[in-house]
Length: 105
Image (cartoon, rainbow, N blue to C red; front, side, top):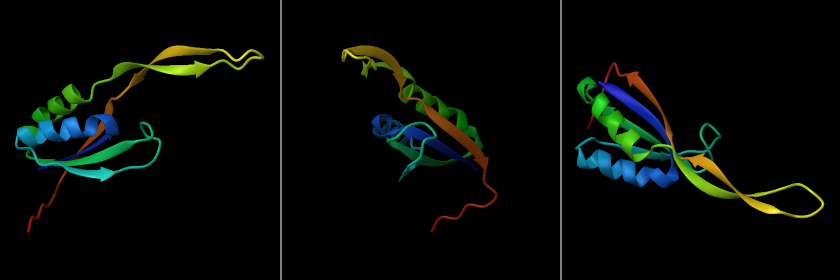
C-alpha cells in the first residue's frame, strides 16, 4: 500500500479529483497554507496499491501540468508604467510514501 501526498494549485484540484475518482482512485482533499508551491493550494491524500501509483501519477501530471499565464507587472520608476509578463502557473509536488498498516472502518 502506498500513500501519495500531492500539493496542488487550487485551480487544478477539482479537475484532478474528478479524474482520479473516474479511475476509481479514492482521494481526500485537505486545504493547505504555506509557501511550498504558492498561495491557494490544497493537499491531496491518495491511498493506492503499489500497482496503481503510476496510473495515479499520470492522471495528476496530465491534469495539473505547468502552463503559461499573463500577469500585470508595474515598473518602479518616476512614471508609473504597467506591463504584462508571462509566468508559469500550476504544477504540483508529490510524495509517495510506504504504508505499513491501513485500516478502514
